[in-house]
Image 1 (cartoon, rainbow, N blue to C red):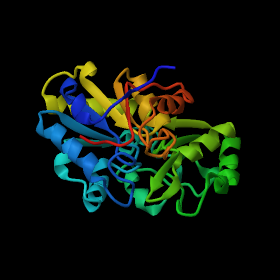
Image 2: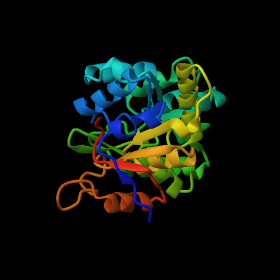
Image 3: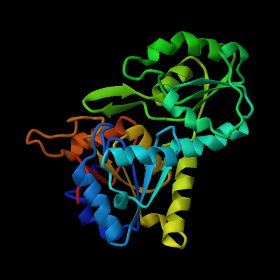
Length: 289
C-alpha cells in the first residue's frame, strides 16, 4: 500500500503545477457555506500565475452553477474557469435527441435540457432512454424509493444517462444521495449506464481544453494537479487521466483519515483509497495554503 504524502498546505507544491483541476462540493463548500481557507488557497494559486479550473459533478451547466457559488461566498478570483458534469452530459443527450427521455430529478435541474429538443416520456413504457440528475426530493428520498421505477426501465433494456456521477455529498451536516447512487442501483438491476462526469473522460477533456485556453499553449499534464474528496470520482478520475492528485480526506469521509492526535494519518487515508484501487500523491484533511 503506497501512502500519500501528507501535505501541510498547497503552498508546498504550488510551484510544481500550472493548473489545478479542483472539485467544488466537499472541497470549497458544503452546500450551505464556503470555506474561506480553501477559497483563499485557490486565490493565491491564481495570483501566483497558476490557473484554477473548477471541475464539478453538478448536473447543471456551469453557467447556472456560478450563481450558487456567488451566493455561498466563493470569490470569483479563486477560479479561472468552470466545467461541470452537466456541460459534458449535454453532448450525450444531444446524440439521443429527440428521445423521448424519461427524466428523473428535481425541477432545478431542468436547465440541463434547455435547447436540446428532447421529447419527454411519462415513464418506462414510452421512453427511449432515461436521464437522471438525482432524487426528485433529495432531502427525504433514498435510492430504494426508485427501485420499482428503475426495475421497469431495466426490464426494457433502456439506457440510463446519469448527469451526476456522485453517490453522496454532504449538505451542511447531512448526507444527501446523488444521481450516481441511482446509477449504481440501476446497474445492479442489470441496466446500462452512461456517465460523462468524473471519473469519466468527457469532463476531463472539457477541463483540459479550458486549461489550454488559459495557458495559451498546450497543457503539460505533469504540471496538472487534481484536487477532490471523492475517491470513486475525483481520485479515480485523476488516476485514469494519469494526473497527480491531492485527496481531501475529510470531505465525505468525515474523520476516517484522522489519527489519534487529530491530524491526518496517511495510512488511514491510503486505506480509504485502496478500497477502490485508487492512489493519490498527496493527502490533506482540508484545502489550505
